[in-house]
Length: 245
Image 1: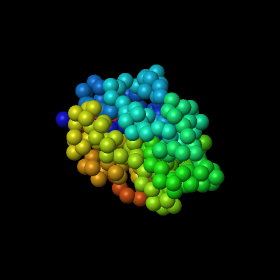
Image 2 (image 1 turned 120 degrees about the horizontal axis):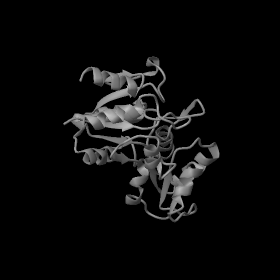
Image 3 (image 1 turned 60 degrees about the vertical axis):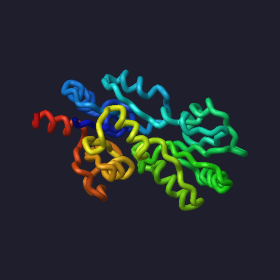
């Protein structure tokens, strides 16, 4: 049996208004109708009700996974969290101590130099680093900024500190999703707008990779390494699947 891993932001919903991309709801309906197993995989770290939000938009799915669902398994309190205001609000359920934490937990944000300096000082004190995910680019207000993956690589270069990554593209995250749908990596196709942060690592694990140009990557010219296929959006994938029966 074959199955799909499907990214959310930039693939099923747009990065600006967080509304369904043309054809996205219909694509999931098609997979459900054909009884093709799939899981929605997102690196969302800003709202714990994201799964319910997607359902409110009309998406119908059974399996869903985001990094916040795995955080309790690795947290060692107290922590020093860094990220957006929404992420920090979620982190308040844990004991927080910026003077002597056991872990530095980093979410996605456009960081200032002073914030990076603060993180570096903590990491140089031998604190463990937790990265919520490892996206390559952050798309906000029609601009593209370094994603959390790029920030983690910068911190590693500065401090020699490797991060434990919870979300995509960690093998543990993909393993959890594979177990959910009961399909091995060699039978899974992953669809995403993040070539470097999702697709290339998934390809190394044996997955088939479909890049959509509805999010982070805007054109064929920006593709540095080839995925298995490139589509304008999931609507084009749907049309192809319908055509091929």
